[in-house]
Length: 441
Image: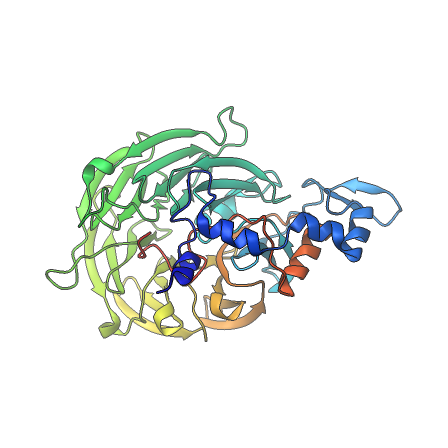
């Protein structure tokens, strides 16, 4: 792998706490300023005259009105973050159409999406994202930043609790720390760290100075968070309220002598099953009927029909079917969690690393990064029913019951980015290339 390739795969590994890493600086030096682009374009100038890029829009009557989220609607929306051009594509799940693409100056590879759709119903409700060396919140109605927490790590995963009051974060090396952040917009401490669990003293496999907490999924009752430990070969159960380790169990390897290196996991809506992805492309099924005491039930590999490179997953509404993203074979593997078997594979025609359910939990929206499109999978038929063109290199996705206000300036810059103009003032995210938690920084 060349240094150039490595910088693209792991954009934050050499970054300081402020997120200004060598790779990001190099990209900025070669890029085009969004502000300069807007100021220098005749078309953008017209948009600016109408007040679009400054948060205003023309309502058709000759007057301008503020659109700082006030123009947002209560329509369900799927948000797809395009890592190649720092844009977000907005999909209407009722029609499966891309209704807008806006430049937001950042990207997220693993936005919180487990409970977000049902907790994000107001324009001021936040979407929680992993950006640069920390976690940020942007409002669903205006896509403007309202919280920013640095974790000291370039690889972060976060999940909203079912009640929407907190966000639990896994920050991998060098932090090796789990955080709890206040996510209640009505709280005086919104956006502040309310719990911190430094896990460096656990150590890690090889020369790693900690267990490498990777990903986080939260039990539907909100009591426990489950964290796969990449370098600890363990599954850690965290008591969310006490914010301390309740249980830690070994994740056994498929073959003796190997490391299991668990990296991602998803608990079923029923709360009694957890599926876990780990080395070497293995899908484990766990019984979580006793939430604080996970028990291994089965392990599936490509020898059982699983696609290659099991990366992460989503679970269907009946808590029976797991959809495992297997980019090594350009498909999604369908796992019957109850039968503990592979029920089939869905061809994507390209590589996908994550996905999200629409707000009604009926269709799975899968960004196919290598094709600049989103594949829409119907849960009932388990087939791709639509393919939607989006921005460059889509990776992360989430959903809400709010649609952002239109912003002609942001849409214009997104259109220019689609023509190949690089925008310099874009904050990166962990994984903008073909990578995920299993890659070391």
